[in-house]
Length: 210
Image 1 (cartoon, helix red, strand yellow):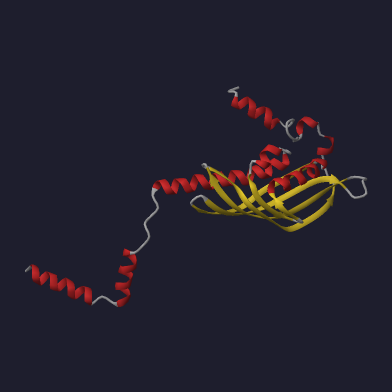
Image 2 (image 1 turned 90 degrees about the horizontal axis):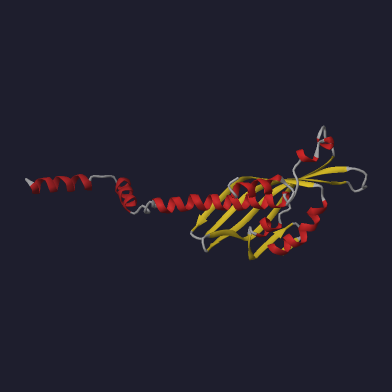
């Protein structure tokens, strides 16, 4: 009886179409599903990389040099606009330029991240507004620009930072100042830079348990 059952099973297997047999073989060779620990590590890494991208934008808006430099490894390479060199040198060169404008606003969006162990590749869009004096020095104007950052991240000692950045500019527009109410607003209602911005005092109070 058992012999007849084995022969019947073998006959059924041999009768399978070639494609079905191939499918069965490919399923057996399917890659191992990532463990819960691996998936959790990827989720945490994705968020930590996103935090660095946002920290860079906030660093410029608050003119927070420590926040800016903390986004990059010391030897990180940087290429944006006419600059090509170390990311730390890019910050050194751009910092006094940005400090001269009245204010900036940077936003990060459309974030893509691919992670491979302790390496990651990221793309994000940026949009920036700079309030500055016009070329004639007679009034303020708004300079709008946008583009993308392409970044190679590395995780060292459990910390993600940028090891290489390529900035690509894709849009710009200049418009005369057109404030409706902000020009006459109380300074206490407006955002400022480090250390005067309320962000720093409120964060310090929070960390102190107040």
